[in-house]
Image 1 (cartoon, rainbow, N blue to C red):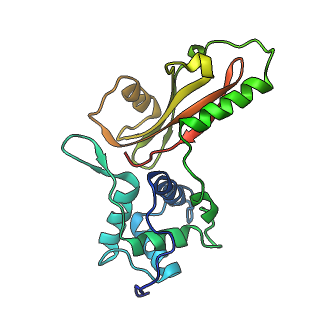
Image 2 (cartoon, rainbow, N blue to C red):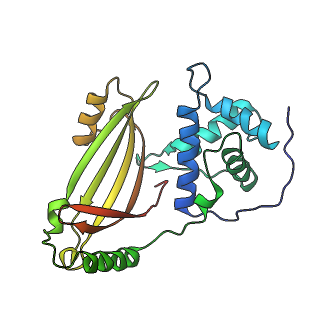
Image 3 (spheres, rainbow, N blue to C red):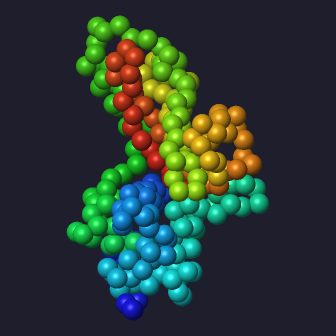
Length: 234
């Protein structure tokens, strides 16, 4: 069994969007890196991290696996909001080292170096697009507004991903819209039931919810180029 060894921190404090990318990569590894068609358990991943990095998360396999699950899926609070515990610095370093290992290669370290653009970036980009498409007929940004949702089945739950485009004050003048993404997991048996629960705001079988927000710039009469400003884990 590998032993946890002290190490110098490489990444320091990670922002919300960086933590979101680590969560997404860890979730993807669990879902898609299967052995014999079987999905990894969180305990399996805890042991794999220990094997690749020498760092054991938690006092034992069960506790470590649960800490990984809580980091990715969150904890339901009394107010029904999700709280996402952040692992200890050494554990977080080990998770990133594992995901970026040459044999795993599901997260590139350069993905953690990008900055999170605010609305100023969307304004600058929209201005550039406006100049590039000068003379082309445009439509109101309100036409782009609305919500689309899709769902996929996991072992014992269904995850719904919904993307909403909202009109923002002055959006037509600047050619920008506000965009939000919501990832919601339900304890449902079918994708149609989960989609119905999502569209109707039902929470009785809700397991976890994760939201992101950003901005989009109108690039053509009926399309938008999205510039993300992610705030994962809330």
